[in-house]
Image (cartoon, rainbow, N blue to C red; front, side):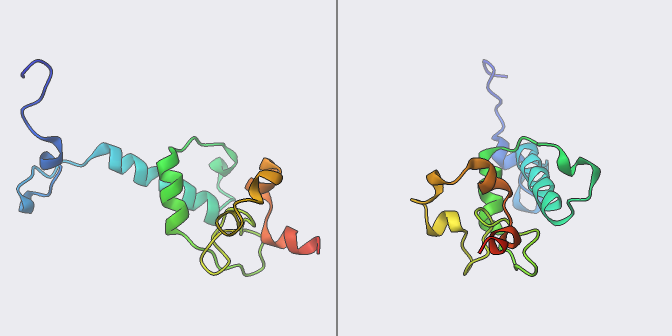
Length: 120
């Protein structure tokens, strides 16, 4: 050790052995992947026992999930009107950012496409 500094570059140690690393998993990356899986499962299988819990997720994970997933509307019961990317691969938040501040935060995070179409 050299004054609290490790002589091994962590990024190099996390490389696969074939690329000159030690094959050690980067726990930060694995943690982000696990949190993305929680977001995916809460979106696709809301019947799971823990789906009702408000699980804290790093903003980077939420952003990565948002740009990685688009929705097919179907009956619209599981597609969020404001947040999901269901309209030409974009969300309403992306298409009309000036409108977003005028919408209740709870409605932005919970209102589905099905509910929005019922109000027409």
